[in-house]
Image (cartoon, rainbow, N blue to C red):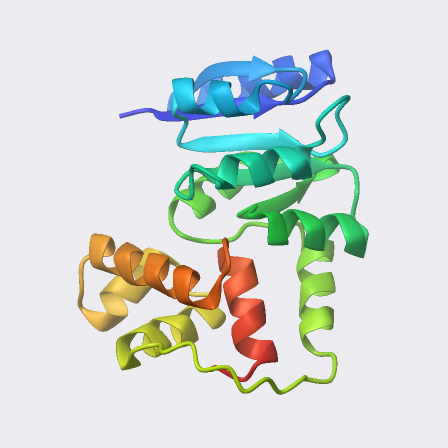
Length: 211
């Protein structure tokens, strides 16, 4: 069953190139593409994509604001940011808004297909420089916060496995539980930690010494 992809990108040539690249694989169905996010809520609700490829710098509503709008009503769709920006502000704003991955446009032709597979498998794809930036941020002095999120032992176990870079499938295999059960636990973890993405959950877990 093909994976349904929705693209938001204001550069028409790149938008068409992304569509062609995805269609050629035979695995992905580009259900639509748009040059802006002015009607993102209606479009996502109507088209119900599995994955959204989201540019950051677009006229009107930018990609980060669009992600926030989407996360107000849809926590399940996987969102990969496609951008030329690799600075702290854009990366962390996108992740905290609820993006699942962050890919620099210069790596799109080589990394996009793998990144989509990775995000569907429960991973958090990102360009190497972005990964280094996030790791560097996590290695800053830890601020100890005495928060009781009432995580169960199983949820703590899954959060620890997530923080080690395991995908949802790998966690299911490790704990000998179904993929759906893992997803249910992950959703509860996100709710308890008041986060919206794997990156945010892991960052919070490390910074507050939850794992």
